[in-house]
Length: 323
Image (tube, rainbow, N blue to C red; front, side, top):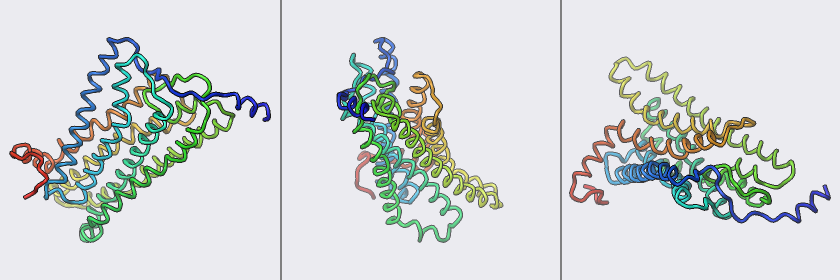
């Protein structure tokens, strides 16, 4: 142990990391840059439209649409924490990020992601109350409670990853500074840390923490939807069952897409993938899932489509003044 401490004093921490997963061929980089730019613009525009329409359209001032607008707002920051730097690195020769910048990206990527996990779970509880407790729903899910639940989701999201990020920021990175990823994430960073075997234990702890977050959210989600399904199956009219299913379909699809990608990315424990598949999984989680959310909520939701058409055709488009 003393020799380890002496050796540790001689370590010099890396000041920046080089992303090794980006293509170095200029032509291939441009091929990757164009669709990624299109996807990012679509994510920003699509989610902004949802946020604005939910705010200015009186008919959408309900708990369900409040949560949808809050989710879209989080998606804006979630994708902005990673994609702009990806775009910049695709066009630059030195595909790097500073140590401090890496820690900031790591924190905001996970804090907004965990906030979304909490919010999607809250939305499942909201749908459960709306369908299974319709008479009590208006008095339970008040606007005040909606705001409080959203704030709790964000507080949990921004506090949960803080200890991990602080711990990683204090580790020495004295070896290679080539990060085998397209953005800063826990496991790729821990692989570069020059520390004793406690790092291996901490990697397992990080795995367990992420697993607990995902499993708890999935358990609550399916518990709520089991209750919803039981109620829907007791509805006698086919039209009533169809309306109940359509109310939950969009949220169910978004949840499965987001958590499916998240499970593949973080519920791996000792399993390892090649750099190619690690990159594909990471892009699915950070790019494809946010890309499909506006599509699912706008194309499958009649109220949002009608509100968008109404305000797009109005001379004072997206004016903050409502009738």
